[in-house]
Length: 223
Image 1 (spheres, rainbow, N blue to C red):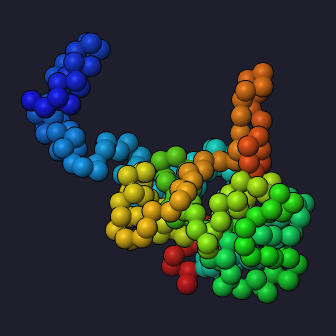
Image 2: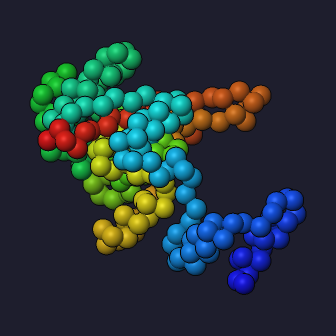
Protein backbone atom coordinates (compact mmCIF):
# COMPACT_ATOMS: atom_id res chain seq x y z
CA UNK A 1 0.00 0.00 0.00
CA UNK A 2 1.32 3.42 -0.98
CA UNK A 3 1.73 6.29 1.49
CA UNK A 4 -0.98 8.22 -0.36
CA UNK A 5 -3.32 5.25 -0.07
CA UNK A 6 -2.64 4.97 3.68
CA UNK A 7 -3.38 8.66 4.21
CA UNK A 8 -6.67 8.47 2.29
CA UNK A 9 -7.72 5.30 4.13
CA UNK A 10 -6.95 7.01 7.44
CA UNK A 11 -9.11 9.99 6.45
CA UNK A 12 -12.00 7.71 5.46
CA UNK A 13 -11.67 5.90 8.79
CA UNK A 14 -11.75 9.13 10.79
CA UNK A 15 -14.91 10.13 8.92
CA UNK A 16 -16.55 6.83 9.76
CA UNK A 17 -16.72 5.68 6.15
CA UNK A 18 -16.21 2.10 5.03
CA UNK A 19 -13.65 0.76 2.59
CA UNK A 20 -13.90 1.70 -1.07
CA UNK A 21 -15.31 -0.88 -3.50
CA UNK A 22 -12.53 -2.70 -5.39
CA UNK A 23 -13.41 -1.03 -8.72
CA UNK A 24 -13.35 2.45 -7.19
CA UNK A 25 -10.11 1.66 -5.34
CA UNK A 26 -8.41 0.60 -8.60
CA UNK A 27 -9.62 3.76 -10.33
CA UNK A 28 -8.31 5.95 -7.51
CA UNK A 29 -4.96 4.14 -7.42
CA UNK A 30 -4.53 4.82 -11.14
CA UNK A 31 -5.29 8.51 -10.63
CA UNK A 32 -2.86 8.79 -7.69
CA UNK A 33 -0.06 7.11 -9.64
CA UNK A 34 -0.48 9.21 -12.80
CA UNK A 35 2.06 12.09 -12.86
CA UNK A 36 -0.47 14.71 -13.94
CA UNK A 37 -3.88 13.24 -13.26
CA UNK A 38 -6.32 14.29 -10.57
CA UNK A 39 -9.91 13.53 -9.65
CA UNK A 40 -12.23 15.56 -11.89
CA UNK A 41 -15.76 16.44 -10.73
CA UNK A 42 -18.52 14.76 -12.75
CA UNK A 43 -19.64 18.09 -14.21
CA UNK A 44 -16.17 18.42 -15.77
CA UNK A 45 -16.58 15.17 -17.73
CA UNK A 46 -19.74 16.05 -19.66
CA UNK A 47 -19.97 15.73 -23.48
CA UNK A 48 -18.50 18.83 -25.12
CA UNK A 49 -21.80 20.51 -26.10
CA UNK A 50 -22.90 20.22 -22.47
CA UNK A 51 -19.53 21.55 -21.31
CA UNK A 52 -20.10 24.65 -23.43
CA UNK A 53 -23.58 25.15 -21.95
CA UNK A 54 -22.19 24.66 -18.43
CA UNK A 55 -19.34 27.09 -19.09
CA UNK A 56 -21.77 29.79 -20.20
CA UNK A 57 -24.08 29.15 -17.24
CA UNK A 58 -21.20 29.30 -14.77
CA UNK A 59 -19.94 32.56 -16.27
CA UNK A 60 -23.36 34.11 -15.68
CA UNK A 61 -23.51 32.66 -12.17
CA UNK A 62 -20.18 34.39 -11.43
CA UNK A 63 -21.60 37.78 -12.52
CA UNK A 64 -20.14 37.81 -16.05
CA UNK A 65 -22.31 38.35 -19.12
CA UNK A 66 -22.15 36.06 -22.16
CA UNK A 67 -22.87 36.37 -25.85
CA UNK A 68 -22.49 33.67 -28.52
CA UNK A 69 -21.81 34.36 -32.18
CA UNK A 70 -21.53 32.11 -35.21
CA UNK A 71 -18.12 33.28 -36.44
CA UNK A 72 -15.17 35.51 -35.61
CA UNK A 73 -16.29 37.92 -38.30
CA UNK A 74 -19.23 38.84 -36.05
CA UNK A 75 -17.13 39.63 -32.97
CA UNK A 76 -16.62 43.40 -33.60
CA UNK A 77 -20.36 43.92 -34.17
CA UNK A 78 -21.15 41.90 -31.03
CA UNK A 79 -18.77 44.10 -29.04
CA UNK A 80 -20.37 47.26 -30.40
CA UNK A 81 -23.85 45.93 -29.53
CA UNK A 82 -22.82 45.03 -25.98
CA UNK A 83 -21.21 48.41 -25.31
CA UNK A 84 -24.25 50.23 -26.67
CA UNK A 85 -26.61 48.16 -24.53
CA UNK A 86 -24.64 49.07 -21.41
CA UNK A 87 -24.09 52.72 -22.42
CA UNK A 88 -20.32 52.17 -22.20
CA UNK A 89 -17.47 53.95 -24.04
CA UNK A 90 -16.59 52.63 -27.49
CA UNK A 91 -12.86 53.29 -27.13
CA UNK A 92 -11.10 49.92 -27.03
CA UNK A 93 -7.60 48.67 -26.36
CA UNK A 94 -7.33 45.30 -28.11
CA UNK A 95 -4.81 42.48 -27.83
CA UNK A 96 -2.60 42.35 -30.95
CA UNK A 97 -3.63 38.69 -31.28
CA UNK A 98 -7.08 39.92 -32.38
CA UNK A 99 -5.88 42.58 -34.81
CA UNK A 100 -6.87 40.47 -37.83
CA UNK A 101 -10.58 40.71 -36.99
CA UNK A 102 -12.66 42.93 -39.28
CA UNK A 103 -12.85 45.95 -37.00
CA UNK A 104 -13.99 48.10 -39.93
CA UNK A 105 -17.29 46.20 -39.75
CA UNK A 106 -18.03 48.14 -36.54
CA UNK A 107 -17.10 51.72 -37.53
CA UNK A 108 -18.32 53.24 -34.26
CA UNK A 109 -15.56 51.43 -32.35
CA UNK A 110 -12.29 53.29 -31.77
CA UNK A 111 -9.60 50.62 -31.52
CA UNK A 112 -6.00 50.66 -30.40
CA UNK A 113 -3.78 47.55 -30.26
CA UNK A 114 -1.25 46.88 -27.52
CA UNK A 115 -0.95 47.03 -23.73
CA UNK A 116 -3.59 48.72 -21.61
CA UNK A 117 -3.15 52.03 -19.81
CA UNK A 118 -5.01 53.14 -16.67
CA UNK A 119 -7.11 55.52 -18.80
CA UNK A 120 -8.40 52.78 -21.13
CA UNK A 121 -12.09 52.05 -20.39
CA UNK A 122 -12.49 48.77 -22.30
CA UNK A 123 -10.12 45.93 -23.22
CA UNK A 124 -10.59 43.00 -25.60
CA UNK A 125 -8.51 39.84 -25.25
CA UNK A 126 -8.30 36.27 -26.51
CA UNK A 127 -8.12 33.39 -24.04
CA UNK A 128 -6.16 30.15 -23.94
CA UNK A 129 -9.03 28.08 -22.54
CA UNK A 130 -12.33 28.18 -20.69
CA UNK A 131 -13.03 25.82 -17.78
CA UNK A 132 -16.60 24.53 -17.81
CA UNK A 133 -16.82 23.37 -14.20
CA UNK A 134 -16.23 26.89 -12.82
CA UNK A 135 -16.74 29.31 -15.74
CA UNK A 136 -13.09 30.29 -15.51
CA UNK A 137 -11.10 31.98 -18.28
CA UNK A 138 -7.42 31.06 -18.67
CA UNK A 139 -5.28 33.80 -20.22
CA UNK A 140 -1.61 33.49 -21.16
CA UNK A 141 0.57 36.58 -21.25
CA UNK A 142 2.81 37.50 -24.16
CA UNK A 143 3.49 40.22 -26.73
CA UNK A 144 0.22 39.33 -28.50
CA UNK A 145 -1.84 39.58 -25.28
CA UNK A 146 -0.29 41.81 -22.58
CA UNK A 147 -1.42 41.07 -19.02
CA UNK A 148 -2.38 44.71 -18.40
CA UNK A 149 -5.41 44.13 -20.64
CA UNK A 150 -6.81 41.74 -18.02
CA UNK A 151 -6.69 44.14 -15.09
CA UNK A 152 -6.51 47.87 -15.89
CA UNK A 153 -9.68 48.70 -17.89
CA UNK A 154 -13.02 48.89 -16.10
CA UNK A 155 -14.61 46.58 -18.68
CA UNK A 156 -12.94 43.40 -19.94
CA UNK A 157 -14.28 41.61 -23.02
CA UNK A 158 -12.88 38.11 -23.58
CA UNK A 159 -13.20 36.27 -26.89
CA UNK A 160 -13.18 32.48 -26.71
CA UNK A 161 -13.79 29.81 -29.34
CA UNK A 162 -16.15 26.98 -28.45
CA UNK A 163 -13.35 24.49 -29.10
CA UNK A 164 -11.31 26.09 -26.32
CA UNK A 165 -13.82 25.10 -23.64
CA UNK A 166 -12.66 22.14 -21.57
CA UNK A 167 -14.19 20.28 -18.66
CA UNK A 168 -11.66 20.87 -15.89
CA UNK A 169 -8.39 22.58 -15.05
CA UNK A 170 -6.35 19.43 -15.70
CA UNK A 171 -7.24 19.58 -19.39
CA UNK A 172 -5.89 23.13 -19.62
CA UNK A 173 -2.42 22.04 -18.52
CA UNK A 174 -2.59 18.99 -20.77
CA UNK A 175 -3.35 21.21 -23.78
CA UNK A 176 -0.51 23.57 -22.97
CA UNK A 177 1.88 20.63 -22.77
CA UNK A 178 0.66 19.18 -26.07
CA UNK A 179 1.00 22.56 -27.77
CA UNK A 180 4.66 22.52 -26.79
CA UNK A 181 4.76 26.28 -26.29
CA UNK A 182 6.93 27.90 -23.67
CA UNK A 183 5.23 28.56 -20.36
CA UNK A 184 4.36 32.27 -20.34
CA UNK A 185 5.48 34.62 -17.62
CA UNK A 186 1.89 34.91 -16.41
CA UNK A 187 -1.09 32.58 -16.61
CA UNK A 188 -4.16 34.32 -15.26
CA UNK A 189 -7.28 32.42 -14.24
CA UNK A 190 -10.27 34.75 -14.14
CA UNK A 191 -13.66 33.74 -12.77
CA UNK A 192 -16.13 36.59 -13.11
CA UNK A 193 -15.40 40.29 -12.54
CA UNK A 194 -12.98 41.40 -9.83
CA UNK A 195 -14.69 41.37 -6.44
CA UNK A 196 -14.15 41.58 -2.70
CA UNK A 197 -16.29 41.07 0.38
CA UNK A 198 -13.81 42.57 2.85
CA UNK A 199 -15.90 45.67 3.59
CA UNK A 200 -18.80 44.75 5.88
CA UNK A 201 -19.09 41.39 4.08
CA UNK A 202 -20.72 43.15 1.14
CA UNK A 203 -19.66 42.03 -2.35
CA UNK A 204 -18.08 44.91 -4.25
CA UNK A 205 -17.26 44.48 -7.95
CA UNK A 206 -14.20 46.07 -9.51
CA UNK A 207 -12.12 46.14 -6.34
CA UNK A 208 -8.88 44.88 -7.86
CA UNK A 209 -9.60 44.90 -11.59
CA UNK A 210 -12.47 45.14 -14.09
CA UNK A 211 -15.95 45.59 -12.64
CA UNK A 212 -17.46 44.05 -15.79
CA UNK A 213 -16.52 40.86 -17.60
CA UNK A 214 -18.23 40.09 -20.90
CA UNK A 215 -17.51 36.79 -22.67
CA UNK A 216 -18.07 36.36 -26.41
CA UNK A 217 -18.10 32.68 -27.35
CA UNK A 218 -17.46 31.93 -31.01
CA UNK A 219 -19.01 28.77 -32.42
CA UNK A 220 -16.20 26.82 -34.07
CA UNK A 221 -18.61 25.67 -36.76
CA UNK A 222 -19.32 29.23 -37.78
CA UNK A 223 -16.24 29.77 -39.92
